[in-house]
Amino acid sequence: MGDQGPATTTDAGTPVSSDEFSLTAGPGGPNLLHDVYLVQKLARFARERVPDRVYHVKGGGAFGYFEVTDDVSQWTKAAFLNGVGKRTQLLTRFSTVAGEEGYPDSDRDVRGFAVKFYTEQGNYDMVGNNTPVFFVRDPMKFPDFIHSQERLPDSGLRSNNMQWDFWTLSPESAHQVTILMSDRGTPRTWRHMHGFSSDTYMWENAGGEKFWVKYHFTTEQGVQNMTDDEARAMRAEDLDCHRRDLREAIGRGEHPVWRVGVQVMPYQDAPSYRFNPFDVTKVWPHGDYPVMPVGRMVLDRNPENFFAQITQAGFDVANMVPGIGPSPDRMVLGRMFAYGDSNRYRTGPNYEQLPVNRPVSEVHNYNKDGPMRYHHTNGQPVYAPNSYGGPRADWQGHHDPGWFVEGSDIMRTAYEAHKEDDDFIQPGTLYRQVMTPTDRDHLVGNIVWHLSQGVERFIQERAIHDYWARVDHDLGVRVAQGLGLAAPGQ
Image 1 (cartoon, rainbow, N blue to C red):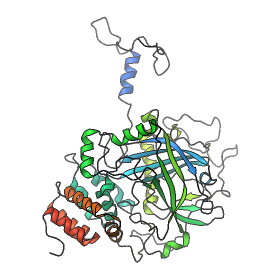
Image 2: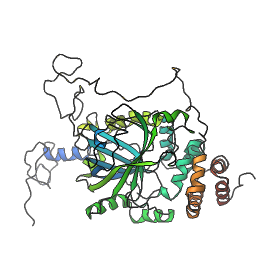
Image 3: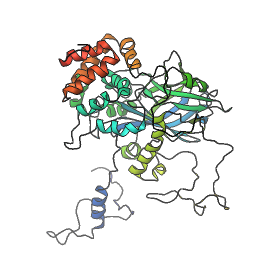
Image 4: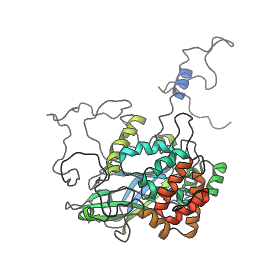
């Protein structure tokens, strides 16, 4: 036998007499209801899960640090970004979007790339993906997009037909779907993929000057992807390949590193730029706005308890620090409500008091009570204004970053048009000028296979003529040939 461990107790700390046997009425009698430890074990067992995230359910992550390598004070006054060599502790969570817990890590999907910076001014959460664009540009369509990627209400089965029906009726999705159907949709590991904010944010410097920015996390391990055949084979070999790879790499001391940079657009450039810079379905060409170095992110510590530190981790797009704010990007503005609300639903209104979510800075406000609250303020007033020394907002030292909005009419409409707001220009450029011949071959094969799995013919035809042929005529012809359907123009 090994060393004797500590004595078993109930959750209240009182000792129990057995880990193996229930309290019964005699050796052959029934269990007794007043077996306190048995009742506690069964009741706790039935309650040891919290509701899953609606999307980005399956994932993993690790702790580490961000280190400033370049002076960016000309663009932002955010304290954690100022001072070359300064380090900030962080948590990064990677995930798949559509798959549930237990789904294969190698499934074709976008990967979530979320970073929580524990700064001295409060938590800053950068919640992005491994792609620089997204499927939709308006939050009104976001729940519909997620529903189309999940399961049918009658059968409980996932449906390629449902996905392609939504995509082909939403032309703004073409850029993201082009990336998803390439080998970038099946990264080899989390360590070997880039990360992006995708959305646009505002930076403000100490002088009050404002800039628009997009974040880039460039892997120093190099980009590596799986082919579709390799990804399918991995599903049979290891459902948790990405989660396992990250944990084992850090355990070996091979700490993954990403170079962190930003594209910076002067505030005044946005109105006259050739396409809407706040449209998350488009990238800013690096020739117009090159990526400027900021720092490096290193992951060097595995979680000690996956549930407590990864499952219960809550990321909120609205968590921003002085010097960083939102932009007119509609997806940012919609996500600023949705993410915090999701966390409050999953783990309660006091989720930010959990150790993994708790800021290192002090918290002072008038929120009170609610399930699982364990930080309190003694006799501090619970209302404002008050005469008894409660916290007071610093309206002179801190202001909400904003922008000027022309006109006052309230309406439902698409973004104001810019001259190059076409949804098919950038995916076409990606196909023709960025992808190699092998990349294009794999893209076509992946699209044809995906469209051939239960997708109705009229949706296949719409995908060819109204979607892929508009991305690139040659691409539309090749997809049509692969499906045995009439090519565009025939």
